Image (cartoon, rainbow, N blue to C red; front, side):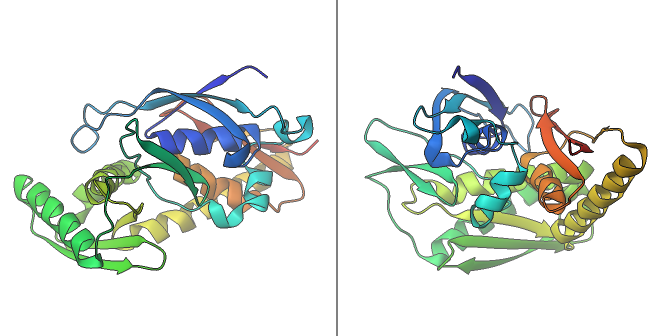
Length: 266
């Protein structure tokens, strides 16, 4: 099988997209990093990651032909979680480990830090950002040591500015904070930045959208292409319809214009 190219904001997200597109789990994916991502400030000047991937030769032809998201979610639901994941820099003495469906590079020189370290690193970075933006924002952090998750809740008077169009600014902040807290860390910390319960409200909106579009597809018997979405939002659409008996979903295009197509099952 020939290599296919996948572009995403981070190497991890490109790997996730490749797994979904090829219908395999990450342990059956053969990939090469062509170009790693580079971060701008709040998404400005950023450069996406590019990988080449294919199904490992030992994987069966049936697995290689499975639809990208639906069956992957069924077989690997506990590994397909939301987040804007950031890749650590890879050095010659690093080894790649698989953690919840994505591969994160770790260096033998890295250390394991306390919850207080991760929370203070995030707060210090965000305070500097908000000071530059002349915004007064209250930052509340909560670290789950067992799951290695860092939840950050922001509150203030101008939260709409921090959310941005379809959460783009919030996603950029989340990505940058993830880079900061994972620097020199032995453990990969999953970061979620939220404000005014935006993440949950957006999830409900997308789930309702998926169901409404699915009804339209069943009624008209014509496929519908949704607006471009990031990998996390595309997964919400796929998950919302994975058990529907009449429609199926798949993604088309290259990020940041990659979108979900909803169509009738054949």
